[in-house]
Amino acid sequence: MSFMSEFKKFAMKGNVVDMAVGIIIGAAFGKIVASFVGDILMPPLGLALGGVNFTDLAFVLKEATAESPAVAIAWGKFVQTVIDFVIIAFAVFVGVKAMNSMKKKEEAAPAAPAAPPKQEVLLEEIRDLLKK
Image (tube, rainbow, N blue to C red; front, side):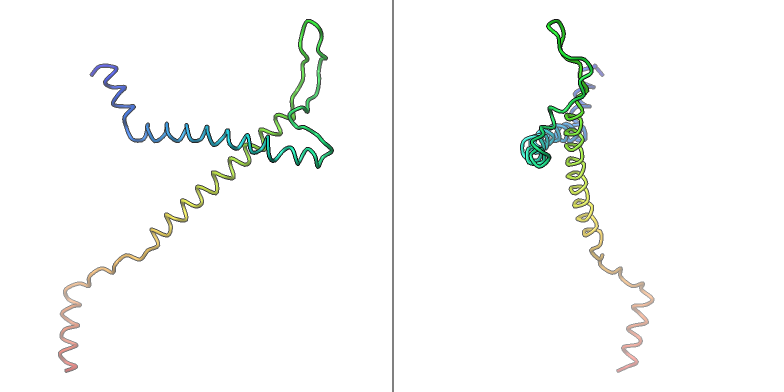
């Protein structure tokens, strides 16, 4: 089997295609959440904290000079990234919990009762005949 045909066989498996779709949707969802946090959630929070823009918060280790840029620890960007992660993790948790509850409902549906053994059916018929 040639390398290309083996790769094509691997790439066309259902799991690989599903995973690729999931990664693409996840990346788009991550951008949406980052925009939600950065553009909608953080500005009012920064305003409530006295007009602070979290992305600008940093510890400057060395000021900028004409020859080199400033060296800083951008802890505000880190805080914003942590908030992004928490929101994404919560959304994934809610989605997985919803899917699990739907699976439980499907599993909880009672199955049709199994047919009684032939001996019990015969005994029930005898009982019904004796009652008559």
